[in-house]
Length: 110
Length: 115
Image (tube, rainbow over all chains, first blue to last red; front, side, top):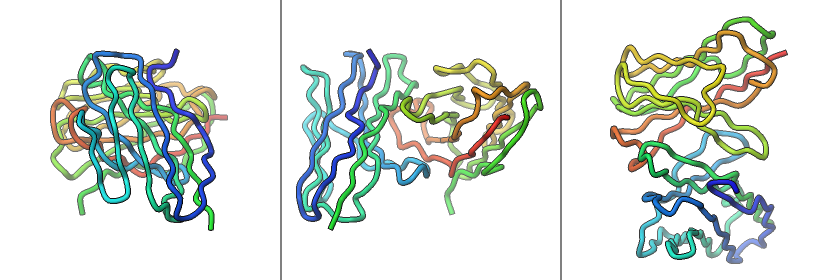
């Protein structure tokens, strides 16, 4: 089993719709969680950190479920510019090791 | 402008010919790391460095070397490249020793092809 798993998609989303997807992680000792965005094989960029109580940044909401060991990302009112691959990132028990999921591809269409 | 730079951006080489990919950051970050990204496998860490003269192996270090003689630079060395090292490589830096707690800034990537 991979340490961090994501549904690769693609998720085809009509413009204006809501889309949500999860990421599961295997190491229960993981402490930090992030969502990164990557466009067309360009460099990943931090979208948002994920906090235990859940957090929101504009149209984006991230949730953490430690009991079931998954994090989620929800995008409301999808824009064409939201089309990208979203990478789930989890830190390992060793502390300095970040593990990336394979990414979930989202395609927002008019 | 705060950034991470990598050179070259694209490289086609032949098996066995030593090469170095440079990485430099101007944010005075302590933590730097190298990743490779392959279809279906995601980003995998090759090596990381918590500070000058401190480096450690990531998940896939075989066939690679690194050095951290200066804080700003973290070159990736392939002593004898092989075709299975054909990949997209990213360098990243962050501002704490414990890089997991802080945002990682990535370079633009180096697309390497080994024939």
